[in-house]
Length: 391
Ligand code: GLA
Image: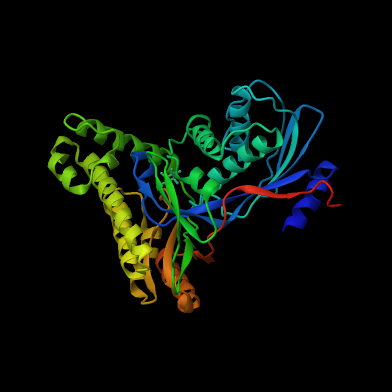
């Protein structure tokens, strides 16, 4: 693929690319809708992601091209930008806007993007393109932001420029991911540990519902707002900054303060899910995939019944998992409302799982899912200095 990209770049811009960057997507093993509540999450980077090839130009213009989308943009370097429509280039444009407004000297660039993360699949294609662009600008213009600052500014762009009030998990995972490691991230303190993913004779499967995610952004923001409401109610008597500052037994003593039944359901999910991540971390450290899998199923049920972000397509993935003895656990991953599920599957049973899942899902939903065996990969980085490569 790399060689093809370099050739495409040369054809499009009539010159060689100077540098190439890659940022992965992510899956979250457990800890869903927790990051914006200041709790624990356990994501890992995958090997699908976003590639960007770039060369500076002397025209003081940014030229955005993509191999995934027809829409392109040529826009002069200027004092700032606003989001236009729902096009893919809003993400890199938002990052450039941030860098310029922060007072960094940026000059014209020719940019070619290519992603192999299925779009709108809940595998964080947006965090991937944001972090890749931020990393690229930081590197090319020698700006000196730390990786954590790149993560934080990418999240800010998603919140303010794009308008999704996401937490920090996705940007963090795609930046700090490590091959064969899961990240145990405390979203309040941003302390993290890269732990051996320790899957033994199991492997990680990704099942894409192939359901277009409609209304996902507005529903997501609604959940964020419901959690803020729950926190406010608890703060009447508890001195806490985040819903995840309390465990379930303390929550039980104070949950009467939350009078709206829907908001109570949301908060119950958050507090219990955060506790589940702690148990999942122990299970993973012990290589106890059976316990880990049970926690995945419990997480899914809670996202279905209490947080109400699943749907019949994602539910079908967890349902099928329970019928297959080679599956330790399965759940939706990411924001929900369509997108992907994950499953822990005995490596020797993967092909059988894939066929069984395809059949079950297709019969139930009416169209086929996509099923992949996923490797856990590294976070963002430069691919290669191309200057003298001759391509
Ligand atoms: C999306 C958001 C993340 C996180 C997950 C749910 O992926 O971007 O910040 O909230 O949903 O866990």
